[in-house]
Length: 139
Image (cartoon, rainbow, N blue to C red; front, top):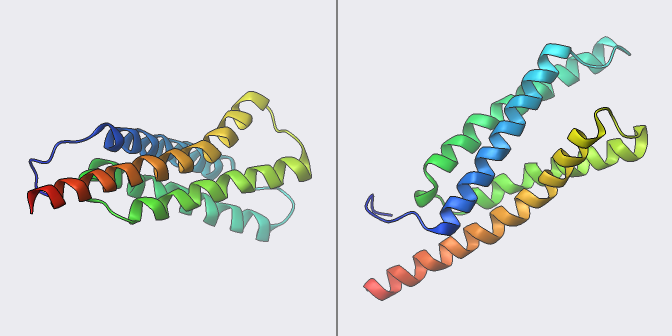
């Protein structure tokens, strides 16, 4: 897409959602790296540290896609998947181990991790349809 193409409302919605996802990934990942994993075994702590690092690693990707949203295609839809999987992981943990403290923070994060992918896919699909209509009209 040309550099002069305006950012639509749908682009802005996707951008905000991706930046929220970046903030969640960075904040949670750094916290998990600082606190360490469960004290059960060295293997569990090692896996926890690896996954916390991966979580932190997602943040720059989300931020970069948000910054370059006008040029993005299907990658945005793929980025919605790990956000949704994070929400599913939280639900599994809640069902297995109960609600961590502070409860409101974890419930809000879980809600965001289910809402963000839906909003991202919906808004980005709208932006792609709008882009297709502009290209067709210009041809």
